[in-house]
Image (cartoon, rainbow, N blue to C red):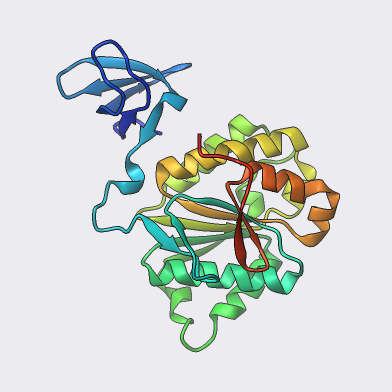
Length: 246
């Protein structure tokens, strides 16, 4: 949530019913100031506001295709991918990003350079090669996205991720394979970040899949990923996670 964003209140204040739309004029701690059309200003906790960014453009559909399944999900969805094999992860990544590119979205693959090179080769085939030159598909080293272990906190990483998403124009989708960054970060801070990232994505209308390798799942990552994401990808199918959008 940023200055000048259009938001709607979730709770009522005296004379300002829940659901009233206004503009963010100040972001403080712990309150956010919102000015309404009649000049009144209300002060809210972040959880008491819902951003209208995801649906601000009437030309964009409210649901997105995932590419690897016929199911659709709301724009701004947060998923984790828990594949049984590396090949399954690659296939899910390719289908997901290709679907976003076909829909005119700005797509990112956050991964190690070696893994990203494999994804590039999938796109360097007839019918898909043009996406590599379009500027709509970017590969970013996870070391440039996630903070180093000694600096990693949920608060700092959320701010870093929000800045990265805000720098992109148009609707955005991300496929992220954190790999060693997940293993090295403080576990409590990492999962707090994953849990809270759901709200950031929903507010910004950006969709993301966080992919955990089979070896990471065996270290307890699978259970935590299910607890911190609203949707889980298993066997290229969508099942509910335990997290909510609240």
